[in-house]
Amino acid sequence: TAPRLYSYDVWSTRRFIRDSLKVLFPNHAGAIDKAVDPGEYGTESRYCRWVCCAIFLLYLWNDFVGCFQILLLLLRVPTSEDHWIELSDGKDALKEESEFSEVQLKVAGIPLRWKIFAFFTVLLPKVLIWKVTAQIGVMFLMETSGIQDLVVNCVAMTFIVALDEQIGQMMLSENTRMLLQEVEPMKVFDTGYSRLHDDDSL
Picture 1 (cartoon, rainbow, N blue to C red):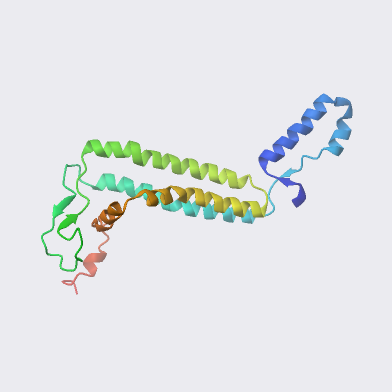
Picture 2 (picture 1 turned 90 degrees about the vertical axis):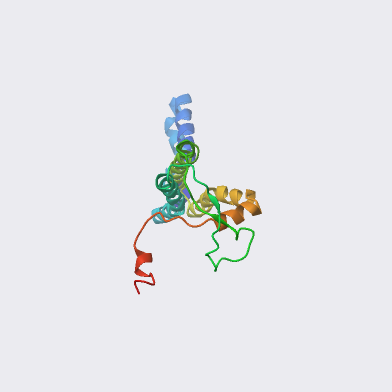
């Protein structure tokens, strides 16, 4: 029943206390069973538990996609020492006048040593952190029994997952943000969409 439901940690502790009392006082085992109730390990609503776990995993999906995009970036970018900043040829008439109007920022080649460095210092830790966060977060939600605690813990877990992005946004300087906004997008997949909407095709 709901009043006797506890999380796994609380339930296991109550069982340990009851069993310890029975070991200390074996002659009163029956009275201890009647007086000490360890409760039950369960949840008020398993559907609420499924929904909270699904919401948490959906929130983690963006991080998983980010890991996959970093891997594609390391694979698709040429392995060469190219310049990421070049003088603009002045053909882009639609580009607004700004501090970067005379230069072109783009994703160019990355040397092999920097790709290896990025793989072991950026991609691999990010994948491991994602796996540990997903595993521990789901276990934490599965061990929560009450509906209110499930909702509160689900919100708390999503806040913890987004905390690194909030810290990163606050630590980025204004110049760095402007540089990131001016970098030309890199085509990872060629779906043929641009060819279908080309002026020559029309």
